[in-house]
Each structure stands twice: as structure tokens, then as C-alpha cells.
Image (tube, rainbow, N blue to C red):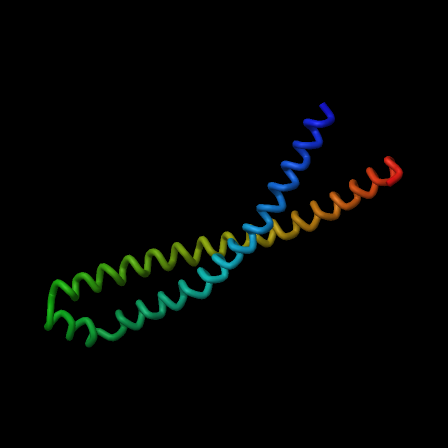
Length: 120
């Protein structure tokens, strides 16, 4: 029983350590979404604010103009979603940092108590 408990604790500890490594990638994704989504929205706004661009494209090729409008609409929707997801994940990641620090403090205390008990 003790051996199973020990291996379960080690398994959970390894999982938490792995999540902390993945946390850094999630943090990078959240930061990139907070930076890239507004840039994409500014570009879409620029394209829509300058009707001469769309007018010239529609005179040259109506299909291309329609395709560009669909592209801009999809771009705006996905950028807004990406920005919202990035902001939400940023908040969640901050909580993870606090919880991980607390976990590491508790783990160190428990390790010290076990060392005292076992006389190591």
C-alpha cells in the first residue's frame, strides 16, 4: 500500500512538473494572441477604412473583392476570439503561477518533515 501511495505521489508530482513546463508554452501563446490579434484588427480596420482599395479591387475583379471582404470578416471574428481567449488564459495562467508556487512551498515543507522523521 505504501509503495502504491509513493508511486502515486511521484506520478502526481511528475504530472505537476510537466504542467509547469507546458505552462510556459501556454504563456507564450497567450502573449502572442494579445499582441497579434490587435495588429490583425488594425489591418482589417485599415482595409475597411480605405474604400478606394476595395473599390479598385472590385473594378479589377469582383470575385476577388468579395473574397477579400469574406477574408476580412473572418479575420475580424477570429482575431476578436483569439484576443478574448488570450486574455482569459492570461488570467488563468496567473492563478496557475500562484498555485504552483504554493505547491512547491508545501512540497518542500513535507520533504523536510519526512527527512526529520527518517533522520536523513
